[in-house]
Length: 427
Image 1 (tube, rainbow, N blue to C red):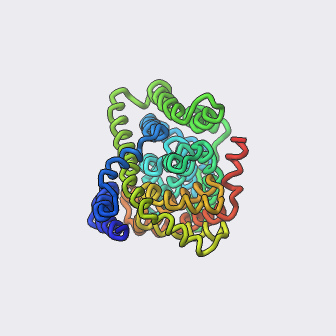
Image 2 (cartoon, rainbow, N blue to C red; image 1 turned 180 degrees about the vertical axis):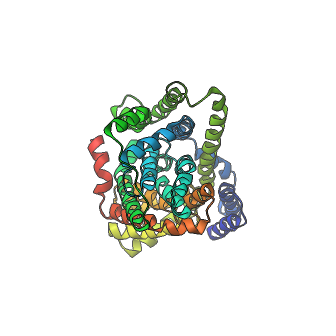
Image 3 (cartoon, rainbow, N blue to C red; image 1 turned 120 degrees about the vertical axis):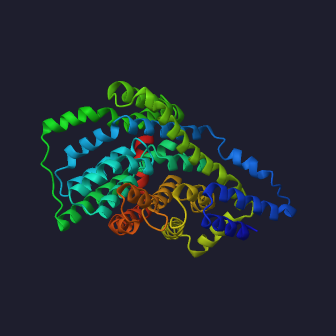
């Protein structure tokens, strides 16, 4: 029964049906086939609702809205100027600026696609004008944008925290060191490629210029600190922090930078609502399928199969990583997250692996899937922005993909890289 449902799911994906509807239809077919075993198909709508019946999920549309407001409110341009002043004198200046800008943007939107769209529309044409290969320009933006869901506020982290009943703030903090490692490695790669291809560096900005652009960007740079500091201090909850940031973003866009106009608010709310609806619908749609998997004891079978290979923590994490890297070649991160996390949680619990460490490894792994084909969402997005053939972007992104896998191995082998900061801040 569950095999038939899985085959139906992938068949529906192949013919082009939306992932959410594919999961719902596949689950319904599985429930009907097992109706003689006491499963009532009425569980489908019940699990659809229960999957999104959580107060913590209110933070998702709030953070999406805040990111949309900040993107429309002139934040991207100011962060690019700030990054150019700080790292523009490095070899391959525009590629370095792209990575640094996306690193900072990650603390604002929490969405890889939003970051790629906002920064790519400005930086990809600029890199092409300065002689960068079109595929490489798109690949740099794709790699930098992958940092978005790893740094707070991260939508995948919020989803994982809800499903696994973890602290959102601890999970936010756990992504900081891996994101810094990824960012540093990407910048080194940009420098090496720039030296080989003779991409020029810009003149080093004076301290006066750096202070000036920092003042102009300070409102945006403070946003991640406000989120983490507010929650850590106990003054506000996760949900209240999301609402506060929306108000903060509105005030900045309307009255400080004044790039956001009242007439733009309708489009801002529309795009934020549409993005939020897609995310929450995916989570709801995964409910019936996840329930069917649980009812069929598939999670237990997969857990036992993996644990039969080894009970060593690192070996099991290697197996899980290989599984998820394969999954990332077929599914986008959010559907993969909501489908496979319930299956993997028993493994983490049975081996006693730190739940924050395990969650971070899973999330980083699935985000890597956004960089490699055949799905490679960020490769598709940036190739469309740069009007560049997809395979040229896929080839140029390989060095960044390789470093991402190295970081994945490091955080799998050394849990301290992940849990040190949450333990330090939350003690």
